[in-house]
Length: 220
Image (tube, rainbow, N blue to C red):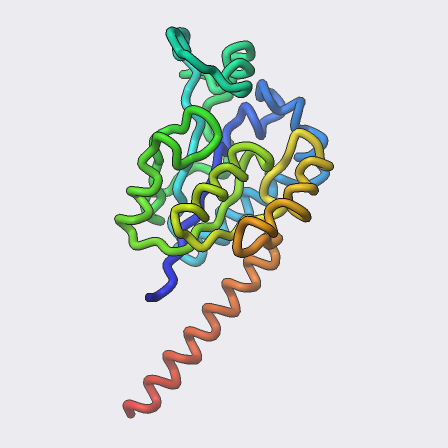
């Protein structure tokens, strides 16, 4: 079966990535150390240059009453309720500048996740199966929560999974680096820097061109 790839761009929201975002102060050290915002913007450009569709995986918008009558709220739910992060209609809930979807590239907006995994209670798998996707490349926020949870679930669903190590951030650089160097290599197929992934794409494209040229010559 031929490899077919999609990007999973997880929570590229102002509340995480913009200096005025509600969660940004807790991430600032790691974002600055990693160059997260610039790398995410470059990542999107690279994906589009190769016509790789981007699935936008975003957190459920906060609205008053979201958690009424719930039997069990997670730690992230309590945090969101207290901070009103990703509040419906707010600047913080918008996609960060330079990361917006482009329908002409085949990008899609996935139904929103309530907790960490972008697969849980969403239509992400449906979008991927409809496109015959076999490989997913994951990037976004936050390294040790939604990004990792989504990557783990993708592995369980039978996808080949790559995580871009420098297109994310953690609640500390130490936490992010622990995921990159210790945890993710035991879970997913590849953990690559943005530069390494770009180089791999270019090599694959060159190989496909050479194969096409060789095939054309044999039919002349």
